[in-house]
Image (cartoon, rainbow, N blue to C red):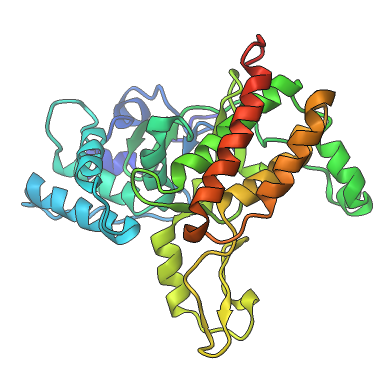
Length: 346
């Protein structure tokens, strides 16, 4: 197959955009688009290269680096709310924007980074990559970005063809989903990664985040059985969720939804949605892990593990449950760690 040149290369050669991947993509052609323009989770190049064609006119010519820093700060504040560490995050983003590592952010580099920051999944990747929960950002050119390859995904389950998936009873499908999974100690290590992700985005460095489509398909894992979040689009800040709920009118709780499973309740008297999320990430994560961890669990552990997972799945609310949330999370992590800390699989 002939190599497909990224449409942004014309803008790169005209000096409109720049970034750490532009040379390889457009000059040396050591990076190419052949396998990358798809939605498969283990493709290495990401970004909406085929969906839209941004203008790349922000910031405008003559914008100082300090003015650009202020623009980035205000953008982050609109997404994350007022957070104590925003200034350090802005500095980190400007460092990433300096694609050629010459110590300064050029106008083409700034335009590329501004386009990337309009994509919430890129912003979230930058927030979480220090903790290793998302695939590492390896480079960018315009609004196209390149991440590390995650070899295994989804977390479990096989994408069965439609006639078969509609014919199989749910219970059988759930059993089949668990057939092709790693050994139990390795599943426990991957599960620890999911629990640590939940811990890090619950009152984390840059506020709290909600995973609004928490299912096995949005996670994968590396050769070392480290969990990676493959679909950052499923995650929003709690600030965004609350702002969204403020605008919604309702008759029933089902009207107060964001994404697949981020819900609040309906104030029947006011006919408006309440701002408080009903179900924390941890409860949804435990629902995803229940069958995954119980299948093949050591016999001496299974009963206690099942009890803790069901207690976890019963969690409700958000802020008022901080202590119970932390207790259940710590107990689950300690239970898994005791089982895997001395095994070679961990």
